[in-house]
Image 1 (cartoon, rainbow, N blue to C red):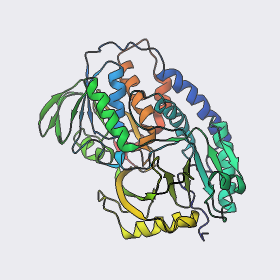
Image 2: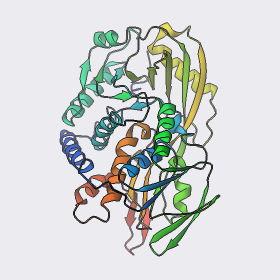
Image 3: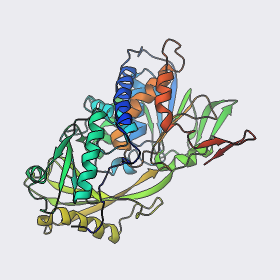
Image 4: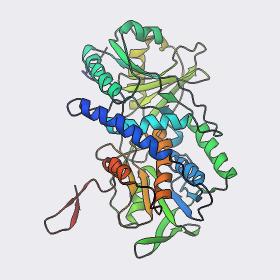
Length: 425
């Protein structure tokens, strides 16, 4: 089906570096994080104001959990809420495929997504099937399944026949696959709309079409964010502006490396028979069948354009459609109804930035999710709300959590010169 040796999609594992020990550590980290986020904290009115800059899924989820912790919350959005990749993605809420260090977060996020009542998000747990198109990919997935199982994920190896049983229209050239029954999906636009509705009902201020143009500070504290519609006072400031985060953090004397990259999605006419139940990835793309029956497929990668242009290209339509039809040749006659694109945020190591910023004591960052922020948004929002609540509470020890979060620290690219000055690698 393909001359390329490896077109596995959404698999971030480095098989030469990840070990059984790393997988077992991930399982222990999951238990520690679960205990931490579910610790019984006081949720009474904290009389502290959190200002969140960025109204995508990360900002909205952070606001949702901050409000639950008793904070007063304002979200500032330069355009309209969820207008970027947050409202333009495949809707995957996935753990299988992530690096082992991210697995505890992804597992907990799936659990939190399942309890996000009363937010309307059309969440369903249909699993994730990763397809191998050749023996090399199959062997790679077999090793991935071993590591994921040790990390606590429920993973099933699938033969070629078993994959065909789940996907009756898949091509005959596949070699097998692996399946995660806990991986899930939802509808981005519905979720964005549902979150806004619940936040408004709970007194969160949502300011759209409001541009940040600076900050007023007092020593190591931010006092106000300066916007196109006036100054907004806050006690805690969170930057979650996706690929625009670097522009915001420049005002905060922080160098945060994030590049914008386009990712494109295609949608076919309705296919009345529901033959694709799980979220599917492989052959250089991902796909699912919507509740209405449309086939949605998309992807991106290093071949895609860097920048904020979200127009569709004939190159991507042809490439992704070719790969889609290699997997499902019987859908060749289905009409392509529309195509759309979003801007994902790419960091140097393809891991997010999360935690306290260095220049100011009351500033946090949650950004750089490299196309996986939609699924990870619940745990990162919950975790951020816990860290903010515990900042001034000496009875709660956060040292273990801080250590766990070191791999996504905003300072991880810094090294110290012999002279003592900080440089960025």
